Length: 169
Image (cartoon, helix red, strand yellow):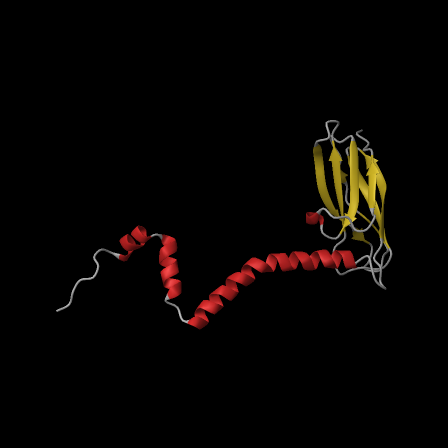
């Protein structure tokens, strides 16, 4: 005669044992190939952002070295009415990635009041000089701008950094 081993619905059992224990039991019941596949997939999901970040850092550092040096220079084109426009010069035509200018301004209490990125617009892909759209400086008493390939990393491209005082008129 058959014996009843457990009672209740699977949901009750899952609540009693706990979610992680349930997953652990399910994982243990899988064959070796499936366990390896799940482990490898999870490892790739965790490690991929670190690999991509390292690749992008290396790419930006390599942009200033080697035979085809990408060297940039920045200057203020216009500084009035609470905004500033920059001119950027590059040593070689470079159309692999967008070149950006990050503009940061601090108030008299040294509090960051402006932090804006603007893409550099080039006349053509072969142009060596480009300009940004106006970037805000309102509220700032001192500002710093720099050229970068990745504004989200706050990392200048070489020595292309300029410190200036904004014109607040």
